Image 1 (cartoon, rainbow, N blue to C red):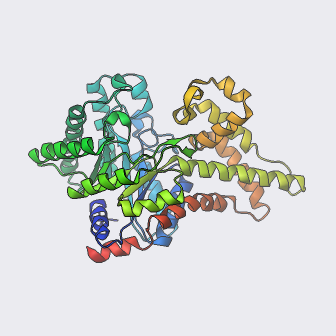
Image 2: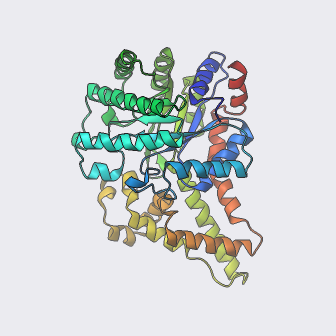
Image 3: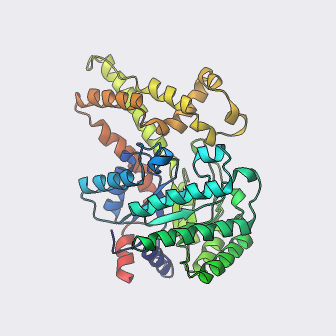
Length: 422
């Protein structure tokens, strides 16, 4: 994993764009160990590098309560990915990445309305754990300010905090004599202000000026708004080809790759447009959690049929437990629209259609709950007794959309192409 850095991957992709041979690499939200395995298997099969992008809510230091994904902290997350990699004899390149790192990026910090100094201190502590665990890419995102809700944070404030955090991370990395890491800056959030090409270039120029003054590295990626937006389990945005192309051209002018967020549930035409628009990377996260949830629910229906045919003594209670835990988690609120954001748990329970939407949206937030794990084990045992490998089905189910993206993003063989031009 050490002889092809994330910076060299991006440089290779930018060089390949000149030959019309490039692709758009994928940042995978690590929703579970099954998701990690699915991503690594497709990466190995199709010969392309892959990034695992963990938010602070998903994976974080023990002192902050870890993360909702398997209770992982940075070190156990790295260990888990390596374990899966070794198990499948993985032979390509994967990169451990921090998605939306920085102040107020844990829900609790934002809800507690921490003062900026305290929030920055906690964000820095989280970055130290990222660095010590060996992360390859850190996203510097100081735009989730609870005191500026609904407002565009002043660009100078974003730049000032971004530079402070990069400078801090570089000092901590050098203290530990660790290899260079990449940085991702900007945000897809509208309050980050990077929604127009003019503001985007102004941000790049001002950031470049401040970083060079301090002898700090330029970022590897700059996030830009390409029109994508994920709500519920749908892509409700509209991919803006011309805007994406302009942002990518602008980023490349400074040797940086354009990174797109909210790339879930895109249709094939929009996916294929990523190649001529020259987007360097896309993040996809909740879609894979939803795919895993749907896989369990399909297996639950199969299990019911096995029971009806007298092939098992009792069924698991996976559907009801997933439903109950999903609703109680209240994490579905983030993805809802309109008045549904404020609905009470009781209102959701009463509405059968809405309840099923909630399990689709928020099922993956509950995979680490003991009740859910117990029912998954029961489900797998029932299937195994009838010659069906339930876990294999779940992994393959998650692989489907990853494979679709990889094919549309021209990723087959991209690792070999990059290595050949290095």
